[in-house]
Image 1 (tube, rainbow, N blue to C red):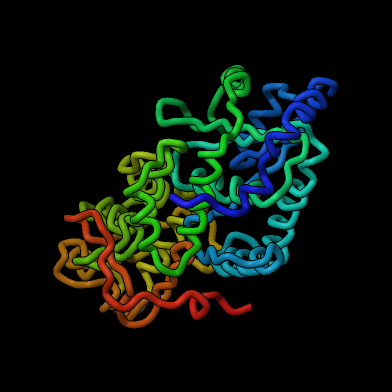
Image 2: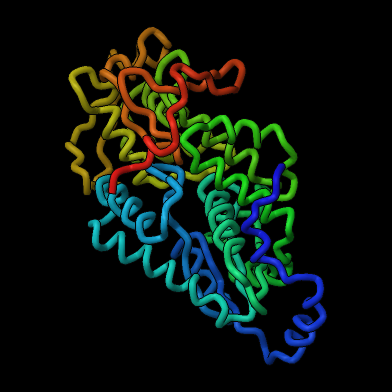
Amino acid sequence: MHESPLLATARTPPATAPAAAAARARRPAARMLHVLNGESAATSLRAAGIAGDVTLSADVLYEGPAVAASPERWRRERARFLAASGYEGYDECLARLASWDRALEDFRSHDEVVLWFEHDLFDQLQVCRLLDWFAARDAGLTDLSLIDVGPAGDYLGRMPPLQLSGLLEARQPVNEAQQRLACAAWAAYCAPDPAGLESLLRSDSTALPFLAAALHRHLEEFPGQDDGLSRSERQALAAVAAGPLPFAALFAATQRHEERCFMTDLSLLRRLRDLAAGPRPLLRLDAPLGARASAACNPLVAVTATGLRVLAGEEDWIALRGGIDLWLGGVHLQGREPAWRWDHETRRLIASLPPPQGPEEEPRP
């Protein structure tokens, strides 16, 4: 794995290390910036009485375009996608993303930045993006630490305050191997060709021990070779194959099949809305879902006869709907046939079409 040239600005040169250590030793009680994966975790952190400023990194990076761009363009593209998906209005989404970025940009006014994240896809993408972001900046005297909660632990937002205090004590400084791997993973995730992700998964990823499983789960969201369904879509159809379920029960059923829960209820609701659209839908909902519908509406979800045939591999969902228009990281699947499909047998991506060129895949401003 090659080393990102950005890392050169992120590390203290050996000649200045003793001076930096002496400066750190003269500091008063450390002022911390805690970066968390959601408001629930932030509330728990405050309840634990842990000192420091708190901000979030909580964009749903596992869906929508993630294309390398300037910070301003990145926020605009993400806000446009989030608004179109019904999370909030465009202005609200843009303001939220900008506020998180502003908090990060002020990191040098803190003695230490602590990243609090879990082992699932949602969080591991945050870790990669954040470590890549910090690798491009001179950290000065600010230390960078990581709390990476594994599958043996609970999710941060559900932990008792005392457990969070223990995690803080056990935090570890981010090392060069972790930054190198995160930079490589983030570049591969944002690339228009997913082959780099598969290559990374065949390399040594032990520096971030939960990353490989998370990225593999991302690849399972590509359309299936036999049915055109992502793993999430297939799990939703299977959950209602025996009979209709209210959305809340359906969401719980799909989460029981996840080794590492990562998807929000709004994300699943958006997928159900897509499966229920078109002249030959796979699902039927007892209430129409607009772009701004919330999970609180709890519609009853039932599978159609067409949905059962697709679930059995007898028909292809993409062929039924006449094509695809879907972003998975930097990969834009579009047209009558997706360029990439996921093969369940080999657990590999299969190229259906020649891979697109990078500049043509960047979303329009």
